Image (cartoon, rainbow, N blue to C red; front, top):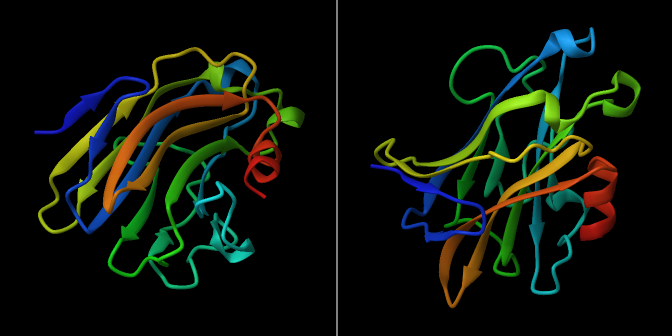
Amino acid sequence: MAINLQKGQRENINAPKFTIGLGWDTNNSSTGSGFDLDASVFILGDNGKILSDSHFIFYNNLKSPDESVIHTGDNLTGDGDGDDEQVKIDLTKIDAAAKEICVVVTIHDAHNRKQNFGQVRNSFIRIVDDSNTTELVKYELEEDFSIETAVEFGRIYNKDGQWKFEAKGAGMKGGLEDYLNKYN
């Protein structure tokens, strides 16, 4: 049985290999054009900065150098039930310098399309144990992000040798560029 988290809650991840599933529904009629939401992952060191450019995982760089983080590909519409995008994590392969994995979702071309997360509903992040497909944790975004075009859904971090998940729900209005600036 999955643990449903609230913003700020933390939970141990007792699985060395797991899948991060991200899902959402959009209100396409509000802007006249379709939404393209994109999941990105930043692999950070002790200093809170990205280990290298190749440790920024997104639709144009689907794998970390050690293949511990693999993005399964870009979903251009978000249509259908379940996960819209997935990221596979293998903590047995992760670089020893990696201390945090941040999961961010952005709206592609949000400014030109006049789109924001206030037009997105039923957003969630979940972690599924790959060994038995059990959902370990789930966090459903309940806030209304009426000006934000990027949201950090959650982070996985190493504390004293134990990997944990924190439900973040922190939005930014500058899109992916804000997160690139924050973590570089």
